[in-house]
Length: 365
Ligand SMILES: [Zn+2]
Ligand SMILES: [Zn+2]
Image 1 (tube, rainbow, N blue to C red):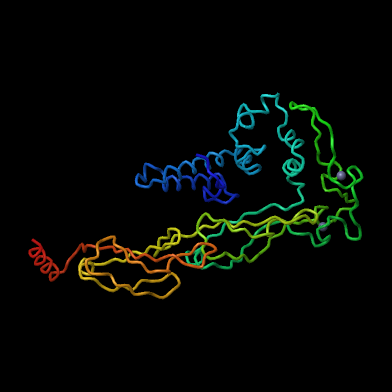
Image 2 (image 1 turned 135 degrees about the vertical axis):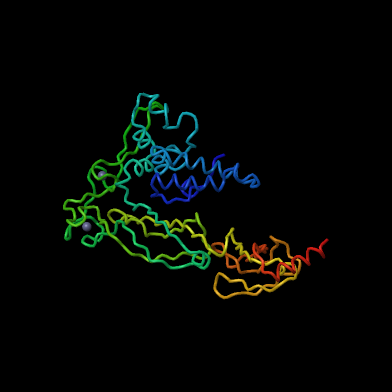
């Protein structure tokens, strides 16, 4: 069963995760979804197969690189397993004498190839990812966080142009500033006119004679930056938040990439969250469950709410506090806080209690 989800999302790891992180995440997910361990959960087999698919792709460094570069579709935009187009194993490249499959696709695909074949030369800055860990409160109500990232920033000496102060880039004479050179090529599919990257200007259409001394002509410099990011209310583990334009600066005034925040929400000692519902366990003695009682329930926003537990409440029965659960991103209405009755049988009794329980037992029968 193929999943449409991003493999990193499925595994719940950032794009920068090490192989060890991926293995660790996999072990956790197996515990969470393995159908043998969750016989009652009908969605477990589907989850497990998604996790396996993602793990299969990310645990193999070669497959992972392929996925990072081309996504799930593979280099031609068809699913990786489609006949004839896979680059794995005894695939296409080897079958045709081992030519460089990247170059073939590069020349076929024009703009696509230009970007993918020379990722370092792409004027748009790379997207960056950052792992944020939130408390349950922060996840439900949203939070502003200062995070420190290392990224490419616009060079202050040349303001990103890459040209030394006092000089300006000029149009490339090889491609007349278009960045592309067209050529006829004989391929196994016949004769094709291809648009390739101009070798002189590497596709930028401009040439710099005196590169900026600070950034050596790239227009960007590495820098550690502290930036404030806003996490919207309602996020949960596995959600990624896009912060537009806060990734790497683009080379030579190209567009900046985006920053993706991969959210992990810490386990909370009081509540269990499932979607927009929060569960809270209220421990009761048998007598309170039998006779009914009032309990003070802590709310995630602070403060408490008193709920009455009706007489004769069974272990596991639930009382709902409307609108005091979690919310989902983009929605204002909150889910419910569900109080679950947990009847705790005393393990030791005082003399008086023992006497009364004995009397009760006689009355029971
Ligand atoms: Zn510079
Ligand atoms: Zn050129």
